[in-house]
Image 1 (tube, rainbow, N blue to C red):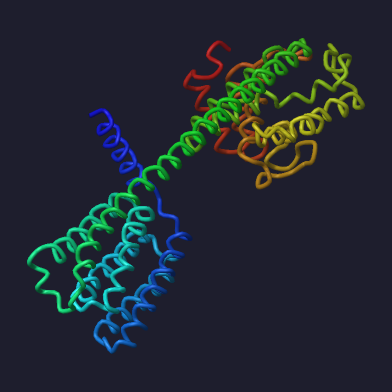
Image 2: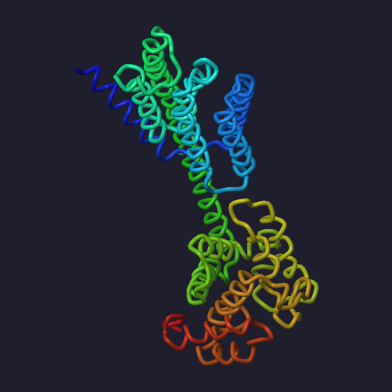
Length: 397
């Protein structure tokens, strides 16, 4: 009983697997080509024997099959095309069996039915088709209905044909179960491997993100006047991006992490300039401005943070092209940069600096109104103003 239960469960598993499996186009085209060759060989034999009716039918089936082969590469109904070809082949079995085409030899080609229908097209289609044909020949060769046969088959032929067919059918089913089970195991192994790779990549990504956070904290610690600046800019950028309501969850993560690293180039700025208590000289200011380019160089090859280098390079650019380091204008600035640029200016105005105290909310709102379409993207500027007025930003300022 256990053995029977195992066999039934295995057949069910393979059956369900084949129901959801895709048909390989290349394999089907090759099989259909073999099918056409078989039809033409049957056709030639029937013509030689003067069986013109059956010859005409087999020729039509061969021509239809050729069109099916050509259509396989251009149709999304591949499975149905192949089923139609197999069914046409089975219908043809009626006149072939009745008239004993080629002295019964043509019926031998029907041993291909289980192979084509079960192994290639799957059990859901193949089992009913193969069993149906098996029942047909069994009834026609073993029961009184054999009187309907026009051709006088030898008795041994009538006895052994169904017997050999059913034996062959069982062999094909067993082969299919072992073959499909092998495929299932391969797919399961591949899924496990993909899962392991995904976990490894996620761990690597997390490690990189932790490194990014650590670098950001180190950067803020280096600049005594802008502690937590990078974190605030990242939080402001995320709030602005979400209010724009046009980005995916993946984009939000990229924007946040890119904003977190927008000032990473300041690592290369000498401490005496970065932490100078008074205003910078022109020479010192030129060095400070280079932090944008240096930041872009540091971030340009980070695969897990695409466009982070742009946030570092261009966050001091302006919509009107009067920013630095390259003076590019609005149509060349990615949305990520426009968001980070506004968030950076917002935090700069709302924080204490060595050369001035933090600005009040009304001053910041006025600056964003004046800067809209000149320094800031209009949409982003209006969002910042709206967030401040609603108390969602700078609520403690």
